[in-house]
Length: 218
Image (cartoon, rainbow, N blue to C red; front, side):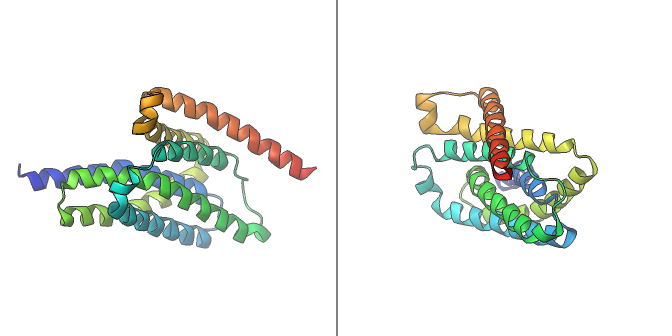
């Protein structure tokens, strides 16, 4: 098999696997929005993810030198998982705009943390071939849009899948935590151990969010 063909299929597989994390986050963030706002949020989330991947492709070498950047991204994903699990079911009519921008904000933060992992993997698979790199970025657009739409529909149909989605996000965060080179020197973590740590932190974040809402309601 020619090397470019092998790299082509590698990029397709990487996009399918790593874009799934973004699709789950976007789908969970928009699941309570009305249909017309859901489509807008998915579009904004998809364009944001692709835009960040292009920026990260240009700045990849610089970003890798920032200490604990991937670890910080992993912790952020744990917080997002807790935030999405605590989301109110069924937004009221008067809060549609608030819910929309909250969903967009969570999507952009998640895109920022997940895009670095995706870009580094695709860049490695392309081996410097600009055409394959551009193909990988372009391929992520339909994967994200279709994937996020399906995820949001499935979550509304089967609410128990919200917990599965949260586990996917926690696993993605654990992967970033385990692969951070600076953290690995101080505290080497395997992916399963980082995942378990993420579950503990999600529980703590969820309790903190519940206490905050209780105080606001008093």
